[in-house]
Each structure stands twice: as structure tokens, then as C-alpha cells.
Length: 93
Image (tube, rainbow, N blue to C red; front, side):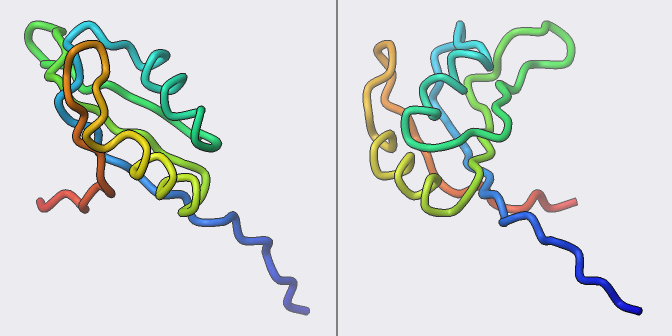
């Protein structure tokens, strides 16, 4: 007998560019959680130095939360930097 699995709603991964270099993943999550449920937030750091590379990714629970975050935060000033927020593209390998 076939039983249907409950599918989790598709989350949306957002690219966040032009972050201040001292931004933590926790601060990024707090900023985006004002616009919907955040599944995960990460700030990308340099492998050799461990310093932030000035960008990160935020996974929002659903598309409507992601769109709300993009509308509110793309171009917004965050600690003196103008954020660049959009849907992340798949990484080419």
C-alpha cells in the first residue's frame, strides 16, 4: 500500500550582499526574522583568515516570507551599508 509523505513547503534561499564585515549569523537571522520564519542564516567567511567575506545566505520558510524580506531589505541601510537581497541562484559547478 502506498502512503503519501507529507511534503514540507519549499523554503526559499536568499542571497544577502554588502553586509558589514562584523555581522554575525545571529544578527542576520534576527534581521530577517522580522519578515517571516527563518530556517537558517549564515555569513560566509574566508577559509584562510576566518574573516567575513561580506555576504551570506538566509533560508526563509516559504516564498511569501522571502518576498516580504526582499521587499523590505533590498537596498535598505544596515549599519551603514546598503544591502543587496535577492533569491539565490544555484551554484554552477
